[in-house]
Image (cartoon, rainbow, N blue to C red; front, side, top):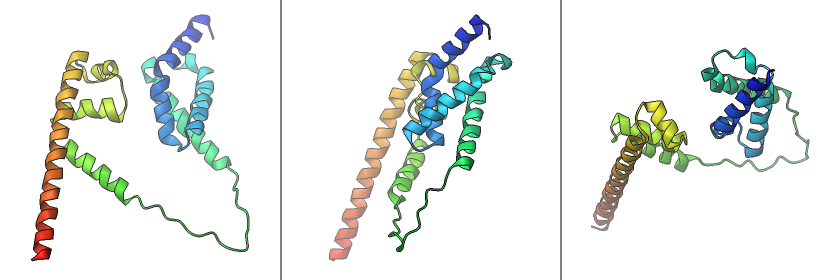
Length: 179
């Protein structure tokens, strides 16, 4: 690789490492494994960096390398099962509350205008910076900030209204049961 290309790769990694680490974190549950996955993918991509003609597709290329690497790790894993006399107690995690929170979030986001919803999702769900969000949506950073401010205020209002409605229903139910 030529020296200019090394600097190009280094600059790319420096500017995109947070987003790439978030992608790796979505692929593997352990944060340390996510860092290892990203480092492995970066090492594999480094050798092929000059073969990526359209550097705008580098994120997609790296994500594919991470997915393939994770699949390789999964296939090569060693089973760490130890035979025992007694079976361990089965423990089932109840994710009902987590699913309810996610359903509420998705439902509450529907009250926002499409532009507001896009800004909220990119800034808070995808954890993009204000500048990255502005570039992705084709608007100024100031517009992103003001849109986000109005959207979050609208979400707060909606959540407060829903909480008041839920309390009123609980009160009615208690009164009906008491009667």
